[in-house]
Image 1 (cartoon, rainbow, N blue to C red):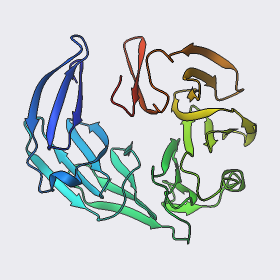
Image 2: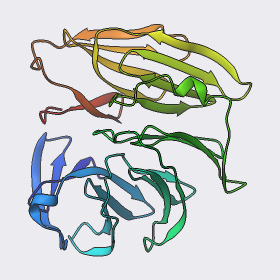
Image 3: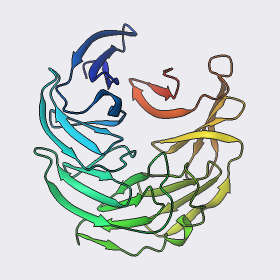
Image 4: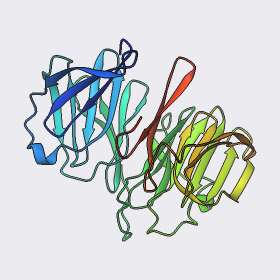
Length: 274
């Protein structure tokens, strides 16, 4: 917002970071009815002048930049998956369900439950939106697809392609770009499908020695064990670019998110580095 990054710390403070000056310019206290020790933000979304944030304890709230709270919902469940916006509605994943919320008041539009006996992934699930379909991978490892026109769960030919991973894996990602649905399994296997013609472009192609990864547009960005950063084309697995950043980060550093600003990409790491 206005060349600023906004994030929340464990003290319920909104932090405003100036991208031009590369420094924190102000802090604002949020009027949240949540204990400080439960503040673990998982995502921040902006929609039609409304700011929405989710916390890992299952809380989701809308707020203003002056710190006032517009509405708050507490689901008392694991909420580790970043929020998505579809048709001006909020899409969230809990441990065993996918829910759509009205962004103006937090009311539930619809929800679908998907139970199994699998363990819950620590890092949450993932969501990809393509045309009028919502693809999701729940933290309990259930994969599903919702047809938003029909308003119901539908069976998909891709189901079996996305069920090869062990339930203990915590590093499965799904993403969409144009007509391509892509799935990266266990930080090793890349699968991509052209949904417009049901054509499998990549079927569990190996990308080895990866410790963390994130999708960005038509690229899979990986951080290798030797701290080499690489960008792969999700259509054909060709390498766009690579750069050695081993002198800038430590061995156990991982990618947590990625964004873009002007003609540059901004990569966020788990140790706070940008």
